[in-house]
Length: 273
Image (cartoon, rainbow, N blue to C red; front, side, top):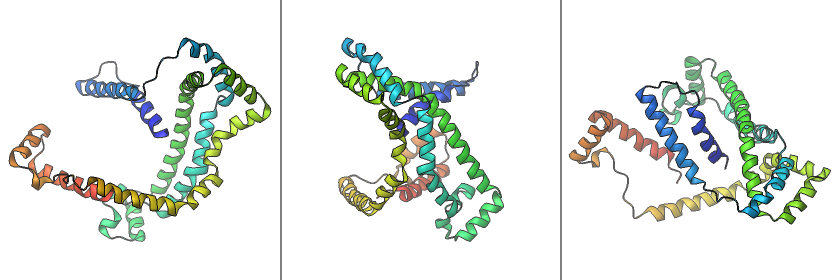
């Protein structure tokens, strides 16, 4: 869910700061971004509220203000970073740098141990650890700002959803609950509880079941794809097909060969099954 929101928000933000007189390349980029925004909007069509639902909207909006007071989205992000992403980043920091981010090759490809990887990283970027820390700190701050910017739209959408899915009597009952001290406390804490360490610990205790499920998924996926031919590599292309790709891309034949080989190698490494 978060990923979908990030994708939807990132595209329009990319348009901010476009120069008043853009060159042809910038115009093309802006056009593609506009198309992407329109496409994303079409992915989430919403039926307009009926007159009856519209009449319930003010109460629904008041309810959402109780459920999601100002600053809630920022608190959710803060809780997520501290309770969930923090330990993960600590583990990544202890594991050391990833060689591919420094020289373009993975340490497993070159069969290098952690000590050699750390030495190479220190040569190329002596401040890699501090750079990583600052990146995470800045990411946390900017994600909080983004969530705060999203909050009015989230409230508006939730209000419409509540107006559409609850009756007047139900909304009044929910509103009455959240008007109590217990209801207000629950509203504030319920979002943060999703990243509570107890929940994460319980989820991780079932990791063997998750692994088994993914293994079964992998087997089923292979069976499902068994009748499909493999993606063609450079050698499988005919001369006419190669020439067409070269004319479309402006690449040389060697560039295409190297590029397709790299893609094949990356596909092999990224294959989840």
